[in-house]
Image 1: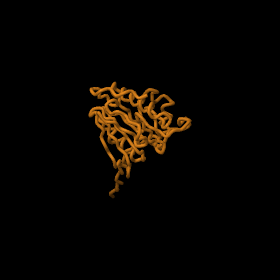
Image 2: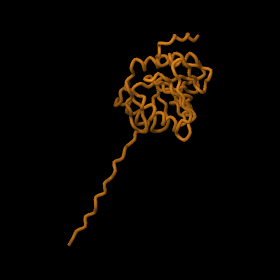
Image 3: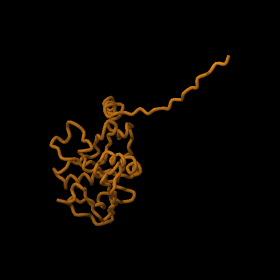
Image 4: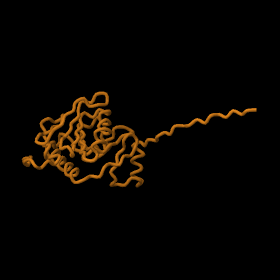
Length: 205
């Protein structure tokens, strides 16, 4: 008598995503270090590139000029979290947020609070252009800038449609770039990405 052997079904491995609440619990428990540069993307904890001197200088310059020029018109969040949904909490270099007197003390800003995201990219350029740009477009963030240090340009992306930005432009050294929400505010590309061979811009009052 022949015994039939049931074929073994090979189960496909599944990926277990982490939500934002577990992500913060890990930080509170010390599993993630307080100074560890990480962000949550599609339920995965992503380690971000170390901040080099050019990256750090661009963040400092952007902070100085954006805060000085915008005043109380928007909150300039520097390297702080933005909660897009239950599985996505990126940490862009800058997020221009709609003004709130409590500075989002009770909850993290969400997609509807963000006017502009700026990523300063050197070694992270491919990641910012592909993974993060698509993420921001998918959640309807109206405008994203990538301060492209290797190529000395500021790439701007706006008008998200069906998960992609329909308008793209590159600003070269010697030009100024303005947020779509504040077209009277101008930031010098040369100053922002450190092309210091040109004449130093006048200091804004």
